[in-house]
Image (spheres, rainbow, N blue to C red):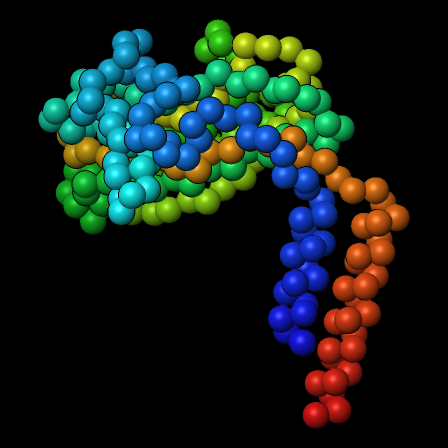
Length: 228
């Protein structure tokens, strides 16, 4: 019965969103190249030490590094891509990605100053926005302290489809103290499986029918457990 419940819940969740063409170019970096993406190191393109590809058992991912001896960055490294919203569903768009953050030192090390990363929509003029089009971030600046993986999703307003010149920014920033100095201990951010798809809901009657069926099956499951 547990397997039936899992299947039904998967149907319910998937019914809220219909998978359509990905509007991100080379979001899985399958060709081990930055095709469709651009790089920026403090206003310049950046070096191979700042931006590179990592091949993990045949699965390639983009890698951003900062605050290492061989990196050119003084402030921030940004991986970005122009976004083209090809349709405007009533409920907006779903942006997903996988991130792995790693710092060479941690808060247990003397003099540690955490580097940071964030994800945002850029209007092409340097203004950063959240999923609703307001000033802010999709993922606010997040400190890197050791190793951590993120599998995250963001909802974007359908209003983004009525205008152009939008960019997806993924930025790695060097953390500094009150004097503007870093700890010169590097951090790495890996990016993979970035996707952007229209997000559409099914009709209310269909949705209610599925939820009702799920409730009936769950109730039957509880009754069977009590009779055991």
